[in-house]
Image 1 (spheres, rainbow, N blue to C red):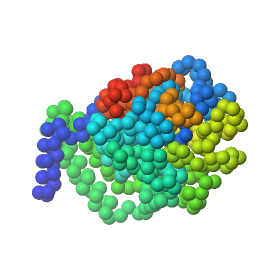
Image 2: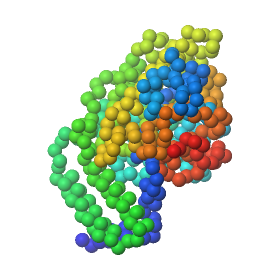
Image 3: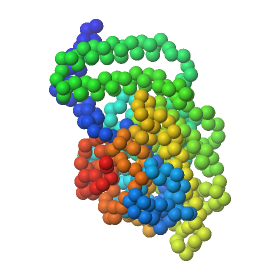
Image 4: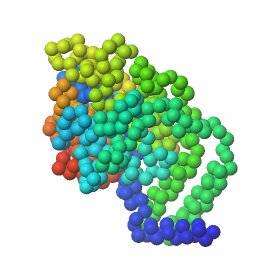
Length: 423
């Protein structure tokens, strides 16, 4: 009893001093996404085969182009064109800057990638602050070429590219009976929540908002004690038995990882997740499409080799199909305890590390966003930002997640959000 009272007294003092979950309370003061999902595919693009045609709201994906497979979900998307990576070039530079904005240890984001920064700021109380999944990301080890997520400057977060291991981590106890330990933990949370409810009556309006945020975090923690809130979606996908590192299993691994990620999000095991398809300079051979050369080699085919360019476009269209599958899966699942779908309350970012990879440039790097971000993102648009630094896109991602930081990464890359993107 004494320990519990001590805990509550300390908690009350933290609330009254304004230190408790201040960032999260700010996040809840306006429309924002509940989840951030990053989808990565490597080796840049051929922009004339990627770009939509038309204007902001009357754009279209021409037949045979890279983004044509996204036509059925066009109204769920914002296509972002023309962004440059500030002070970054080539494969390694692009991979390192793509999600970090080139921030160092002294920057406001501390060199973290945007997914890890958002996860650290959300304090969602889920089992996993973030979930990093890969497809053929381990063969070359850990380095600038192979990693996109950074906890801090130079400290990357390795994606797990073994679906069987991911499944055990997420759903190893799915279907097991509720045990005494869970009941004991739940009873403690119930007790703390009840006493915090009494404390709420003694607080002013501002402190009450912060306490409500903490009570919500407790509710999330309680759900995290189980495999999730919906038995149908939280059992986990079927067991994966194929060799996850075999080239020809690349599509099966990607599909399994996507299903695992969506299940984890639907169960509220995490609210920040990423799926990384290989890495820059990826050697993957798209044999299932009848292609015999590696993806990286194809990405450097010049316009004089029309057949080679078309093979690269075919491979890029396949990535577009995987992105569409992810978006459609999120859109098919209802928002737990709310209205609309998971997609309506999520922000999905398709990121690449270069623009025209044949030039080794990080200019006009293509991005595609999806999801309603809780009402903060107006979709069905094609937006052009020629020559603007993509740091402002990263700021926009943070603010779509309810955060208030005015810069991200290297502050010399620009301040504020991309004009017209949010709202």
